[in-house]
Length: 374
Image (cartoon, rainbow, N blue to C red):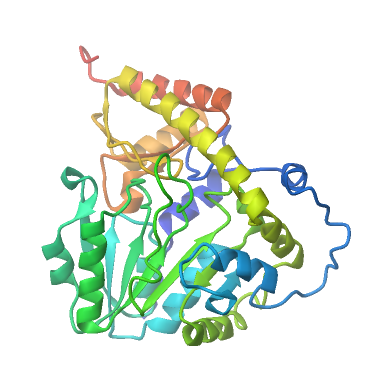
């Protein structure tokens, strides 16, 4: 029996994101140009030979990535084509038919979808809005059994932008340690915090952690398609071997550009650019949501995403389709995360584009709002 399930959100985005006028489905900040990056780095790429590069990533790039994780060296790192390949090879390596996989939800649905395709049972651990999008420790303990092979964590979270508390992190580690499970920590939004310190990685908290990340969200460089896995060295070697069957190697040019971006003298300026987009965009979005009067939300802590609940008489997928067809604006319906009545807004666009897109959404909201409301 074919266990493949289409990845609803990615199909939705891939189909329409370059057709609509305004894309509010994107979860990162407005991307940089090659020229911007080269100017920040004070470098050029004329010398880069467009051959096959080191298949697990150049030593320079892996060393820069390792500096983001306590206790890591280049030997812990495998560079991949985006975090999508990173998550894929991890699940392919760890999960066998009949295993159980626990996942904190709502979440980016790649890993649960892969678990289902690999004939594993998926057990959900709900993140509760009333707790600030945190899990109940009892829910974690109940979902993790002797059959659990992997606990999937997206931290900071997609779609909510919440960061797990120290108590929640400790409960996840305890549950994993109790049964010897691995933790797959998808940490692509780390570095895109709105305030406070960088979210600490799960890597280093527990021996069986595989952390994934990418240049897409916190760095504004999704077009590089550079991601990575950070894992114990023997596990990193196993995952590297899996990439021989997928993409073989990252692109040589994108490897070099990513290494430039992660240089200590460059990465801080990229983060300043990212933070400016986040602060400005969230302010515009929250002001607009207050004015519409149909949304309730918890402010995100990281990433260019907000996951408000709306009070309108329409299903979330129907709302998203209406916005696409009538207003040429793309959003992600809560249905794609198993949560109707919510919508995920991305607010990383330039301010003028964001304001225009939200004005268009507002037109549809006014059409849908019951008479006498607002």
